[in-house]
Length: 348
Image (cartoon, rainbow, N blue to C red; front, side, top):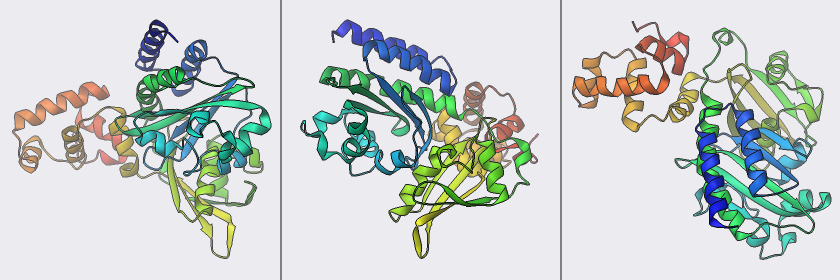
């Protein structure tokens, strides 16, 4: 790949990622751009919870949607080019054949998922912005294809822009106001990924996520991903957004005496759990986050200045920046946007 193609592709992806597209549109348009520079037969995107690296959503092209088997083998933390390793590594992209020393059978992911469908080349990318992973992208080639080091470098070059684009696209929403009275739900999932028990509230939440609790293939991939983590002895959690902007919190743990079965609790995400994601989406600085927290608590300009040991003028300067980033013009609207309408009663 010549340098002109690389530079042109990176520039186009950066412009697209900064254009404010929704998650699906960003994935579709970025996928088309990358297909021209990195030809491949199929690819799959995942959004992730940046705190836990649990996969919360997907978009697949020329391949079936991921299921419980994919959750079992595709994201093992000790397999080659694991997402955790790509997030913290010098390069956020990796070619599987390079990582395995051209011995693809070393990888469980390759043996269980890729080889059976004829894939011979995998290029995996962690989409990282400001140190946090907001999604992943995997590109696949079939025999006799594989990816080159130059192509891996291009993938790394676009990883940050795509991470920022996913961060903004997926997070600029707040909870809908009618959810406060809704009860948590419990879903029990077996080894095959089927729901063996579903409470009525869980059924309601799953329906809102566009899932069918009576069909294992129709459960959200986040449920399968959480269940697999719970089965290996880890309690797992993730935050996921519904199509209408409501934030949910999912928690999973294996059942005592029946480790093959996992209980998943689905409930409304507390504002404090969602706020850090929104703070990141709007690009708040550390000081701006402190000021927003103080505003939500009802602090006046003078009180905030005294608490943070800065001048009232500095507080106002930061507030002007916060308002510009969020597109709101009052403290009440700011608190409602970031922490929900129930947190505006002390603000005027």
